Image 1 (spheres, helix red, strand yellow):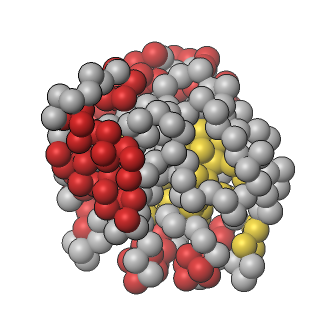
Image 2 (image 1 turned 60 degrees about the vertical axis):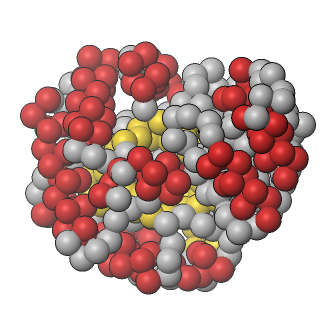
Length: 318
């Protein structure tokens, strides 16, 4: 995956446990902290107490408080959110929101997932393939990388690099992802992170007349809609210019974005569905672009607690 001026989804984010990186580099002032019910800028046992009072009607809740109170992403606020806040405050539950992870492909070689985990990264997005549904275009290390993540108890998701320039190719890319994930599910492996379409410039797409709003919006909409209908949790990986000029408000408003921006934090992001932020890889403006014993690797932060969202919602076979 390459760097992009990216766009992201910003419904809610808990940026916790990110002290391993320069605080100034990762200041994301405009992102809501899900769980910060009392609006004091921190997430702790006081938030559970505040929510208990709201539910008991001892407090009149502000709309902003209710937006931040659905910590289990169930679509409603109730006593189960209080319980999860209590577990989080006591250390019994660890949210994925605000945690760092990596994305990998066959280009990373025979990668050691345990070294990634021991370095403090807590999820992996794995390339399953690229383009049309041909086995020759499967990522040659996909199944191996999934197995390694499962063995290391590392949450994982997938992405497919798109080369689609037509509706037919978009549908083929859907079948490509579906085939590979079904094969992993048959082994008992299910992703707890999203299923993403990687939409970025390629010479193939441009030379075949596909690098324009009409095609990019069409193939992205088809993919996201159908992947969601098949029970997966969809996501779009792309750059800011693509999201702003080649994709419709329908995409921006209805699907999470994995936003690649390597030079600054996405605090100026003007849309509202920030799901993940890719902050480094080919360059190291914000922190080292490598991991000891692993090498240069793309780095990300998850803005949402995807394992909770996906398991609670029954996505990806859960």
